[in-house]
Length: 269
Image (cartoon, rainbow, N blue to C red):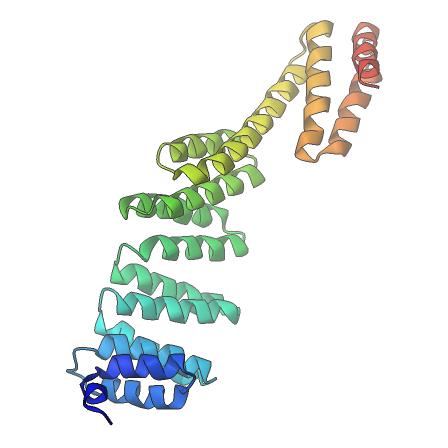
């Protein structure tokens, strides 16, 4: 070994070996660092060892190394280790273990990783149709992202929250979330948020048109509401619903209303 190689910190040597494909040699160095309970680099080495061992295919040993890093409580490397564990469990479909690992990320309390953990917990909750829990975690992800100065992940969480609300018939709440997100979102995220806001407004419009039809207004107003509803629904991919709305108006017992609807329907032919 040259003098410069002798002076190279073991972590850097292990990193260089791993990047060069010598994973076994890297693992040996990292394992020695992890074995020292008082070593200053123990937490970082344990995370690195977890990654290298996983690449070598030794998943359980990798998880043991990650748990060692997590146990150090290091604000950076313990959080990384918990993320490593959580992502591995998710890939295997072990949702309960993944949820516990993401909760461990929150327990470490490192601001940079907190939004990611809330997003993941929301994803797991949505996968189990626990919509209330998913919404709660997405709200937390928005707040944590903004608090950590990561407006991009906050905007992403807001967009996912709005999607969830739209999927479950809450367009008004979705619009409020999106309007709030526009106040802090990075400039390149704004167009997507505005499109989603437009979709929320379309859903709100459909609801208002339907209320008007059901409200028993005069024939002219009801016919206009039927037309607007029938022409807006296809924009949301609801062609069959639009057909039913037209049929309702065209076949209505009130001949004056039906005649108004026929005029409006024919106008678009």
